[in-house]
Length: 226
Figure 1 (cartoon, rainbow, N blue to C red):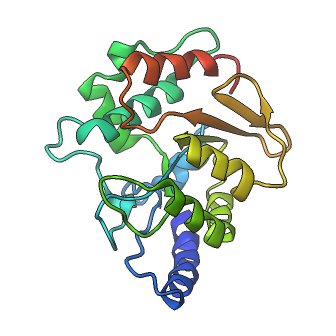
Figure 2 (figure 1 turned 90 degrees about the vertical axis):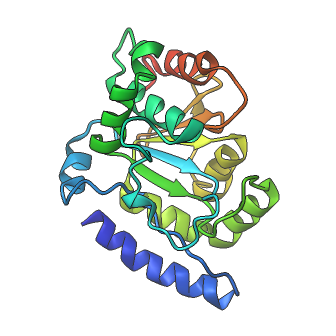
């Protein structure tokens, strides 16, 4: 099972972090789906992983158990609002069109996506930060533990990686997959044919930009490119 393999990885990773004097390891990976996560993931033609910076004050939590909602009816804040819209849009994207922004930001569709669709959530920095993520800290952590981040992604084997911000995108290309060549299809979409991986250079989910830029721009760039 994928998450079992990740748990074994996290034991080694956590031990090394503790030797470095870093505590509060937060686990992540393939979101739990009542034991069906492996089958749902393996059956999905688009295996979507969100590569993000760090948790906000959630030391020691297992992200895989998060619902993405507090009230059960709508996504929790701007962060999960955009994550849910991206997940819904990418999943149901077609060769010539994509779900409308109204559909992607419909609370019912968003909650169905967050609670039922398979996806992976991977933080670069496994130690929580605060409300503001410091780019230098994220990059330093990635440099120190790049081999573990790569191992986590290799276990998951996503074919679409949505990078939450340019810093994370650079980390993915330069530190996590340094030996792979990614061809630029457009400013958002970069592909490696050998591994069949598409990396999306997205804004951070909480970026101060309108949803049209956050969603429509991404979807338009993906048509015929995934």
